[in-house]
Length: 476
Image (cartoon, rainbow, N blue to C red; front, side):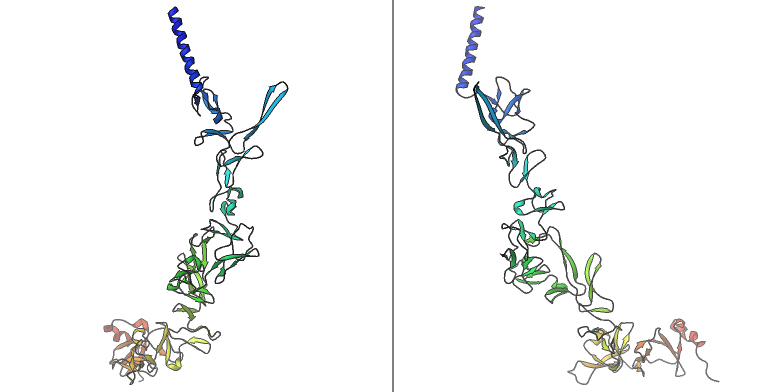
């Protein structure tokens, strides 16, 4: 028994020596957040930890969280971070001092003793501080948007005040439009503009277009589309109309779309240095006497009623009034002329209007162009353009094409037919220079032509018998 008591005392002395040595060396163990703790393993008080239910927890778990990167407990945004500590030194002396606890990341202990998020951060629902929203990010109030970038919460999105500003991609902030007053000194103007007496104005050589300072048509753009007006692009270092290849022209200081060219398009949101917060619709005016029409989900310019497309322009159609505007022409392709206030064929030139081909054609004897008549079919049926005696001239006259045709008094070519043979031809009414409404059929009997109705036409072998009963009776 005496031996056991001596051994026990020896172990107690050894243990005490170890503890004293550890304490002397400053090696007293301190448990971190979530570690087990007891009276021999204390929590790290410098990290604002305390032992609760056998584990190290933040001293105020309802108002604090443990940040691993900082290895200590910190106070949520909106919670108290500064305290007045009071200690009674003796019955007559009271000591007071301020105790301060660190706030969560991106927050600071304000003068009122509470944690608040720093600039460009906002309080999240869990008490932490998260970055404020940038351009086009969702929001529910102005306070959630970056004020240093002049962003406001509009329709649930952080964006610029559209009435006075737009977003600049390179500067990544809202800038004041040309012609508008800068709201404050920290506002910049749009590109190629400067501030003058509180207003943003374009530099020399630039013109104002929707609040932007851009390069006009035909000016140098250095390969940047963003310098040209929105209806233009930079091509070959020069600003040109966006759809110049497919029928746009520059007229009256703007790009105008010809027939079948786009008149309304939507371009990408980030096409320019300064961008709106939504896709940009660009409308192009249509050429004179055309209108913007939606067809197959595409807006194109189409000629108005009474006009017809000619080389991308709209000219007056056949039978329509003319002469009221010297800039309006009758259809030059058919070709029509303005005669007595109406677009029609020139009968004085031996022209007539052909309903089947919808254009003017030349009667026998009409002047024609030997290089185009074969392809455009200008001469009346059965006729061709015969050159004049001057072999160097391109001008000719319409003549019946062979000995199988004869020229009638109406200056058309009529096929020469044999006794009893039926022939189909288009009869021309010379008084109004137009075809009759229906095709006419003639038969030659005893050198006399007789007319029959269209519904009596049959196979060639049956024609004579079909027409026999419909011919007029000879005088007895």
